[in-house]
Length: 245
Image (cartoon, rainbow, N blue to C red):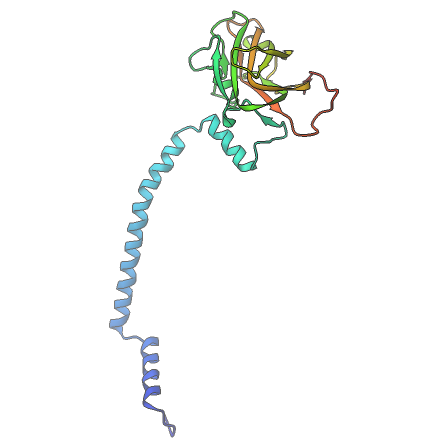
């Protein structure tokens, strides 16, 4: 390098640097082939993973989500079982279940009253006929208190089948009672959520819903019935049973 001299080690390092920066054609071909082979292997692996993945996605899209799964997802996203309405103590998500029903039509079982879902293409509860009263007994997941009840008519059903008069009773001893009536309510003939706040909380392990009449159809229908433990401070001590808009 002109009039400068370098040691043998430095000379070797310079030659190696030049070889790396300016590889011969054979080395470039080898690197390209290796890169192409690795890319092909990666594509094969991705393809193998994509095939079962596509089947899984297709199965998920073809399998409708159940109301209970939808409710669990909603609670998981919120991070709590308490909503603006309170805690729904007769929700299947919290372990509640229907233990008996006077009558029900296949596909329109009483358990649909407590699955927290009302929607097009999904029927609610239907009685077998228009004989009254019709009773549904629900066991709460654990002993609690009920301070409010809500009802929702089934928008898919003819309005004349909608439930008109109901009574709610509670027991802490057994599904056979004895029961204490906590209110008798008249439901409006519309599909809005109908709220009834109680004048006092009542201990409950079992809830009996008595359907007393409908609006004249051949059976009685109802989409949802829920019993609520309200958030603290949600109502005053002098509140009385009344429908809330």
